[in-house]
Length: 573
View 1 (cartoon, rainbow, N blue to C red):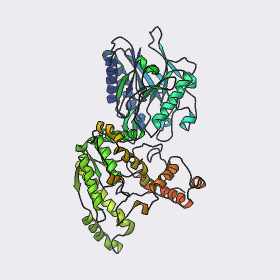
View 2: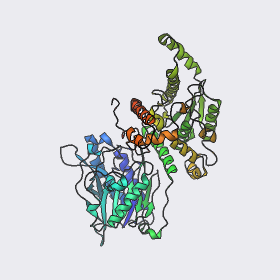
View 3: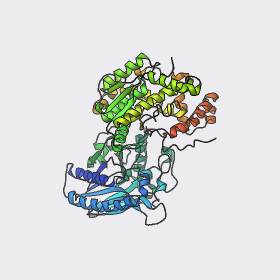
């Protein structure tokens, strides 16, 4: 009786392709040593692994629901032919049998002996942040204990859960959905293992939280917890995988890779942690970098882009995006455009050029001074003079945005936006200018987070990760000249970000409190924040909402990002 974990990267809605991935994973698991063509093997896959998570309104298509049934029939038959010893747990959307909406269950199907059947229906349906499961699914009402294999003299007793069913510890998670406690319902069932099929998106610190929740469940049940998570980027969400097995004593005894696919056959020693060394996971900076690289790579691949383009200014934001893009696609598929203006410093141009050379990127330089002059002349009759002040500064950004879009359009490239979360929060960005693009790579990274990630990338600690991802493994990558440069948009002589905004070390904790912790200006003022500063930043956050509504998708890596989980009105008091 063997158990294997398949950490898979599905394409949302590609039921046929995902079924093939599931079959290949089953064959891979069956062939792993010690291979046994007759001994039973249970393969556990992620939540909604046949659909990919989140399928959103694709679930409403009757044709896809009908296709799912036919594919499950075929997959069960193929499994019996190609890996007959494998029983497969698959995440599916099971019809409720009712005409009333929602008419689906988020469910688990068991495929074995050429047949399939639904064995569990998810009880806790998240509808917060980026989740909206109650739009599509009805909640299951019962706990399930699967005895497997049924013909064994002493079959395993397996408790089945799906993702949110594990998140019942309010003291750990900070919140708890109303509804049953699926773990409590299994406490007296004398389980051998608790299986949790998940699709849990990445955010900083979340892997540690998942393991704490699993450790608590393992202690309550007196059984090991097998946690299998989806991996891959799907639109704004990045799923980091990092599946694991948690022993009853609260120790991780098997750990799968962070941000890559893997099929792992558990051996008996991995369920007895005293016999194995504790597995390690990457540090938080490496987790963050790998998640961003995976998000960019999958967004491009799954949307059909082979080439990427970005504007390279010599600043730290575009430098970090250039590194992420190079790791995601390879230097030969990334092009950088330098667009100096009369206000660009010589250092910015040389810094951008040096970075591109270190990464091996192709660059082109298009000075924008002639275009600025042309716009000035064109606008003078209507304005009674050339544009000035903020209008003139934004015009430069929009000229650059237009050039980038023209190149991307002509060459079929994915244009990467390089703005950070601090800028998006307060509107320190130009609509139809530097906000142009198909993906906001670091739009969920505060400026201080950008500094920290770049410092890590230039440190010896990052060298193994850089080598693995095809980046130059040694020496500075971003470079001290870029990392230590005072931030500036360079849209007027001598301009610095600090002319318009507080120091990022002051601004970012304030923004995090407003955005991620739902703090009010009044609460921050009571906590000692300057009244004028708190009220001004809240005002900027509100007024920039119309810009964010028109921004490209932002890769989510924090607890609350500007995207589908941010549902603020534009017109509001």
